[in-house]
Image 1 (tube, rainbow, N blue to C red):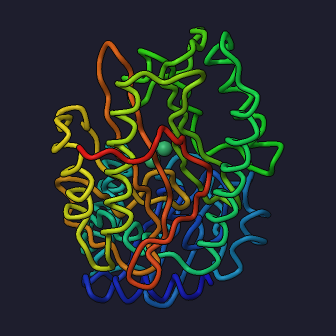
Image 2 (image 1 turned 180 degrees about the vertical axis):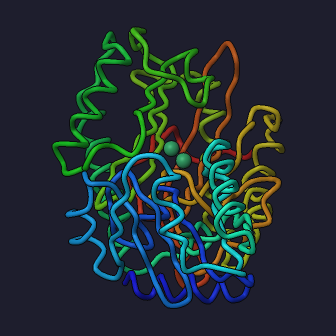
Length: 364
Ligand code: ZN
Ligand code: ZN
């Protein structure tokens, strides 16, 4: 598996005229090597693959990354980098410009200038991320498992919700149920936003108590073998008012339009437009202030992007969220999010948690 990924990377390297790449972004490092430790660098050349990490991780690295030569590093970059790159000369070395700090870059630059002056540094934004966007069957299986855990946790906890519980109390019930059902850590902090708080797409759970009839936005994700899920449902305890029904049904209709209209090869921009048109037609265009969706994998947000400015193409075996929302200050909000994999020309949903029935879809 890792071998395939390395050969895909090397193909991209030769296309970009790179002789070596230094990988430091944690999920990219894990994706290419299998190593799950939290510190280290990969140096990948046309023929060699080296994993440089410190004493805390060398044993783990040997077990998890059998395709790599393990290189133990100690202390400051200047202690070990010259030896790591000793075989490179007169070549182009890619580095992950979006992920290294300014101070790391300065040190890298100075060391290369002093020890390997003919080596050229080349920023490689998104090189590994692009490979990660297309999932292997095993990765889709892990995301499916994470989604099943999330569906179950959502349904089990929301069945026991009562008016008067606080947002923080329920957020913890959701988090602990995710863990009990097999989530290894959680994908991101649970969002549980009730009433007016639901007008904030990424609200933090507060001490606010749930009231009847108001919108409650729940956004949560599990992690299985490193892979995330991402699910949002909006619910209501008691009888929803007319605003709720109108807003909810518009968001649901927008999501259905995207799920049924997205096709393989479509751009992230065109996918977003499918849902946005429904929300704009209902007069809420300004209230859908975020993108339609994002890729999900080892990271909870990754490529491809589905949004008004995205040229990303939705290709076979990409996994992404479809999550339109409407947020009205002074009232609350509604977001509905499912995960899908591009399978046989169209999206197939990986999440299955039940959605509210507010009396069917309405025309805008
Ligand atoms: Zn989400
Ligand atoms: Zn999401």
